[in-house]
Length: 238
Image (cartoon, rainbow, N blue to C red; front, side):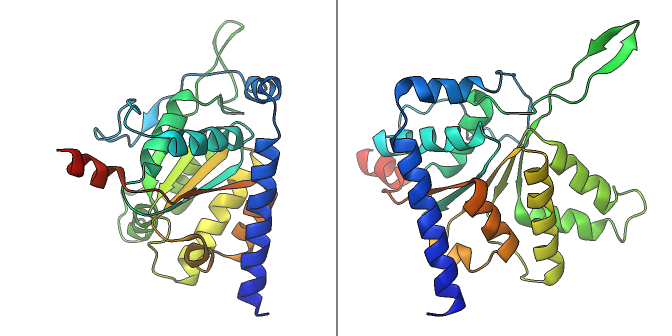
C-alpha cells in the first residue's frame, strides 16, 4: 500500500467515525451540542447576491449534510465539502454563517466608556483560495497594501472562515505553507473553517498537506455532496 493510499484510508476512517458519531446522537444530545456556544448574529463579509437564505429548493440529502456540517461548525471544527458543481456547497456555507452558533464568536471586550465593556462580533468571511494568495503576493509589490501578516490575521480572527475553490492553487510551497499555517492558527483558536472544492474526496486529499489532513482527522467532517446538481434540476423543470 502506497503512502497516498494510507492517507486515503485514514481520511475514510475519520469520515466514517464522524458519521457514526452524528448518527448516534439523540435529539436531546444534538440540542445540547448546539447550545454549548451561544447564538451570536455575526456579519458576513464577501456574501454574494446569489446565495440568499432560501434553501427550499434543496432536498433531504442536502439538509442531512447541512445538519452534519452544523454540528462540526458549532464545535469549531474543519468542514470539507466536496463534490460536483451546483450541489449547494456554497449555499450550505452561507446558511451555516447565518444559522450556526459558533464558539469564540466575539472579540475580547473593549472598555471605552467607563466600566461597561463593548463586545464586537467576529465576522464570517467568504473568500476563494486564489484570492488569498494573490492578496498576499500583491502585498510585496504595493506599499499601500496590507502586509501578509495583516491579511492572514483578519482571516484567523473570523468566527467562521469559508474558503471556496480550495483546490485552485499554484501548488507552490509558499501557497501550501500559507494554507497550512492558516488552518493551524484557526485550529488553535477553536474557530470553524469550511473548505469547498469541486474535486472528489481522493483528488482533493492529494492536494493537501499532511498537517491539514491531520486536522481533518482530529476535528473534521467530510461532506460528500454526491447528488445531482440543483442547477440541472432547475433547468430540467423549466
